[in-house]
Image 1 (cartoon, rainbow, N blue to C red):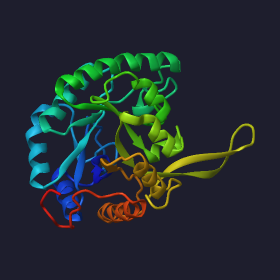
Image 2 (image 1 turned 135 degrees about the vertical axis):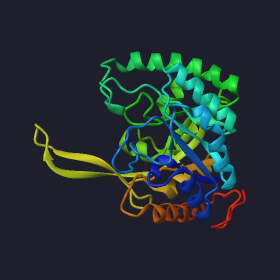
Image 3 (image 1 turned 60 degrees about the vertical axis):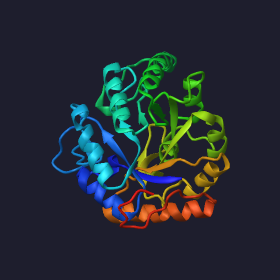
Image 4 (image 1 turned 90 degrees about the vertical axis):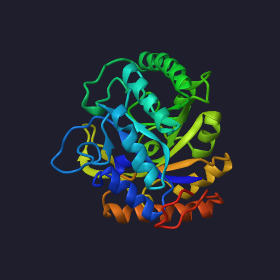
Length: 308
């Protein structure tokens, strides 16, 4: 098992700073965020994120991405793409960039639910069966193009989309080649929507379990009441060791199914400053992995500039 960081969660660092800091802390790899984003007066996770590579001109950025990553001694755990499966031009370009970098795998987003406002878009109003069927059709094309480029396209388990759960993702990809399509299982997202007990969910994914994202979340009771008079709860991101999900139990489930690949952290909590947060997360992951009986591949000492 190897540990990396998704740069959506490192908005204050430039790419060079992110690579330098993560290497110094002892991380194995990095998962670069690739998307065109809105500007913001202050760096944020979703807008003004300094550690994001623009999708526009991504082909021209490939040499610089490769240089920064390689010189830091980091590996690619994949690319954090935002191209949606129905945007065939965008998908083609990000698959090609993944191949050129040797990053092996990249997230290709599925369609949002009909009542979703994800990304600031207007809800489509389409039914789940319509959206699921459309996503399947697009992903058949995605699988073919991923095979052409020799990479893997990843479906993320994400609230507000047609694949919020492991069950829905397995159904979406059933029959497609698991060498070229797979699933990102995400502990934090599943606490918001799509929760299934980790062990049977991972077993269900079988050969489609390709990647793991780890963050944590919690539900908080507000002072509001709905029209029927019931309490209103909202979800918020939490530090890895403070949320409702047990990272230790999650790692035990991963050990049970023999998962021995990348675990990528995307911690969107803000209680602790960024550098302290990432360093603390790595220490916590190592302890959890050890307690779960997992083997950490190529463990590096903090400050090492060589690949593990």
